[in-house]
Image (tube, rainbow, N blue to C red; front, side):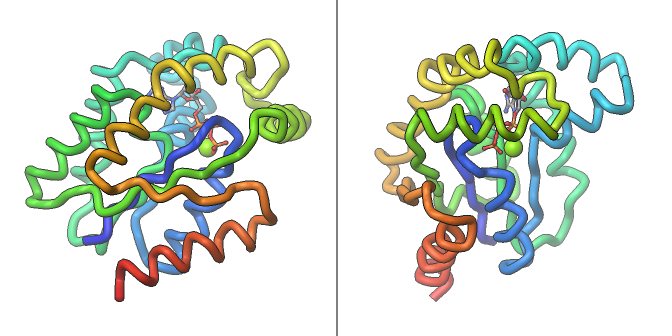
Length: 191
Ligand code: ATP
Ligand code: MG
């Protein structure tokens, strides 16, 4: 299997690039953000609880997210691989993902880290907020999200670079330019 983690700060383009990767390489796209937003839209109890964290820019607690990811993965059998978008977001989640994949005798193949400067991230998120209707795409929440990213999520870069799995992708070009860089990396891995 080809198991990709797409990694990056909020607004770095994980969702956009994941959709393109999953189409080209026929991988199963697992987006925790999309899953959470579907729950919020359906107004489930879980969605309401989740939104209380999301709207403040905080992470949903690890135990909850790890269980949810386990559920999502169990539903997908016989796939060629996964693209994990928005998970892991903490070291604990990273370790949990390794354990889950181990159960299937699998592992994370590569981690694609989308590198985008902070000013650009803020611009993109505020622009997206004008149309997304997301409770977290606004000036008040964006700062908290970036702090959470630096404190809780960014340490995963070390976790993966120590395993020689981290590949940095320049994330500030056009969508197609970024995808081109990603494809070059993935084509080399597939061989
Ligand atoms: P993109 O790069 O696609 O713009 P994003 O960071 O803007 O990504 P999502 O991945 O959609 O946004 O996540 C939105 C919010 O959902 C997070 O700020 C967080 O509150 C919650 N969330 C998503 N995934 C997780 C996770 N793995 N653990 C905890 N909370 C999560
Ligand atoms: Mg997203």
